[in-house]
Image (cartoon, rainbow, N blue to C red; front, side, top):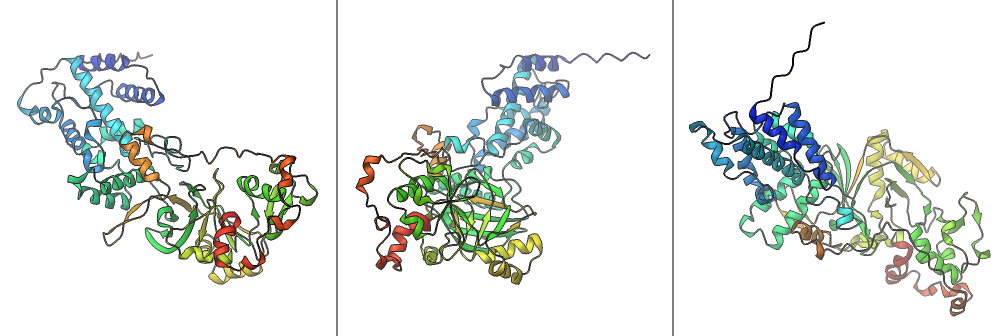
Amino acid sequence: MEATAAPAPLTPQAEALRKALLALPAGADDEERNERAALLSFYETRRYAPLWFAASGVPTPKAGSLATEIARAGDYGLDPRDFALPAGLDERAQTAATRVGDQKPEAIASDEIDISRAVLKYGRFARGGRITNPSEQLSSYLDRRPQLLKLEAILDGVAADDEPDAYLRGLHPQHVQFERLRQKYLALRDKKKSAEAKRLLANMEQWRWMPADLGDLYVWNNIPEYTQRVVKNGEVVRKERIVAGQLDKQTPVFTRTLKKITFRPTWIVPESIKVREILPSLQRGGGMMREWQLELRNKDGEKVDWRRINWYRTDIRIFNVVQPNGAKSVMGKVKFSFPSQHTVFMHDAYPPDKWMFNKARRTYSHGCMRVQNPIGLAEILLKEDKGFEAAQVRDAVRTGGNDNEFDIERRIPIHMTYFTALVGDDGKLRTFPDVYGHERRITLALEGKWSQISRGKDHLAPVELQMVSEQRRFRYAEDDSADAPPRVWRNNASFRGGFLDSLFGRW
């Protein structure tokens, strides 16, 4: 049996690098531990041969190219000072051909590791890693994550690329809007602390959190703009207005895939509304149940007579409150479902509330998105998914009965975004009010002012039930009129914009 040849001994530079890598601290957190493991794995595969230094100890041209690009990090909204490179690396690389390296192997190993760590940090920041968990650090409504690449992939990629500067540039988002915003930012090079520059940086950062592949067909709801776009193969094929959540019941920012389109849907009242609005109404006689034709059902779906229950001693959360589709349906004629922990969706508007679409600031809902002309949206999506013609869709609305569901088989992402700045095809910058304060939170985080960030409430926290005592029930009238609005108001637009919208009309 032929013996396996022993591997050649490591060069002095490689041995020094091996020892330096093994001597790296284990790491205080997952980020540091993962970085150490990636460096060890990468250089072990190379048998610890340096990537950034020649055998003579002078920097390679790749090292010089890398250093030059990192020095330009500000062109992409990053800070070059965040990436610690060996002193004078670019100059040393430029003079490499005219002098012999005089660094000791240990010094070369230290510089080699510093450069690779700078590359990994650049890769992390380019993909949004300055804010590692927006939903925990900024607001529970910001359900986004940095689009980080695997550390091993970054090291392998930069090693294989003959132009490491181009490789670093390619780590940034490739979305058209990111590049357009970046160009606007470059035009403000001398005003980087201005409010406009900060706004551009905050919006660029959000693009680092977006999926790299938005989808060949997707629905894009931009909350501060109150606008929905349907985009197919990069072209906008539909643009309509939407209504978003109130300031204390915000529409969350996230991406999920469309699963169902339901015509004439039943509304299942969310737990927060059951506890905070339905229960007090029941304790006052149940006027809202009558006014909005609501039903009480147990968890098996069986109807329960809500009039026979003592609502001062009963937890409403053990029941479902539903509104079958009808003339007063808050869902309107169609609902678009893309399930998430946020329990929000897109839907039609209750007919008397169509006025909301004509307002400039459209923050009226409990978090869901009301869509203008939603049947038109259904026609596009069902045409793409099932080949339906518009007449088939309209027929499904008219004759399909309640809860007429269509499962969506094609991958159609629904992107809920919070961009307060967009650049149009005409090159003009359009800005929108920071209605929920997310832009300010992102700006403070990028400036390192974490203590000044107000996260607000956790909208995913369990809804707490606070029962009204028996003694307080006598403060309320015993009949239904205590909870019903005066009849003279019911067809009045200002009333619909007040009482009704604050309850069901805004969902």
